[in-house]
Image (cartoon, rainbow, N blue to C red; front, side):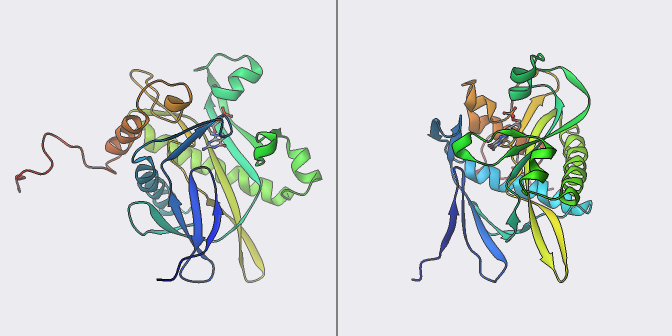
Length: 253
Ligand code: 5GP
């Protein structure tokens, strides 16, 4: 049997060459890391959950006209995506102060922000993904001014959509990270949402209890990560709620 070609292996995903030019297969691993890989564990089933959740979010975004790399889910752990030229930045949108922003600026976690705040981080593991300004981005050529404008607009649309979707199931979207890539269509280039959107890359707090339902459960050792992600998936209707036995006979109405 022919072995497929691996294009890239990251901490939580592997990219393989796709079946057609311009496509890739994105494989979701169970590997879970924090602190730039310092803390590493396998969380059974996490890859399956993130594959389904990222599909759910990307499909929803496409439905409101936000372009993404997602083409279709292939199986439990893999999805077919468009190959893009990645912009080497992480785009973070924050609605509520938490994480590195709280640390850096001394703002108490949970403080609502007056408006969504967008930040850029350079994707560079050796440097620990440092915070960068728009000035740095333009001066060092990581993206153009037009790209920046498009990235901000994409990030805000993703924020509006995701905040609404999560609020509908009793979850507050505190912040999230997306990655964006370029695709070329004839003489034009377009920016599209790439990588993944999942509880690995968002902060999700239960509206009623404040319970964390995202990767902070792993980073801060707050409990069972796969239970937290399963709860998000169940509320969104991505995984069926298991009331009692799933294998036994089911009532059909
Ligand atoms: P912070 O800057 O507070 O650590 O992270 C802000 C948001 O971006 C959080 O939702 C966090 O999960 C996400 N984020 C930031 N950097 C990364 C990263 O390297 N990988 C992933 N998966 N998410 C990140």
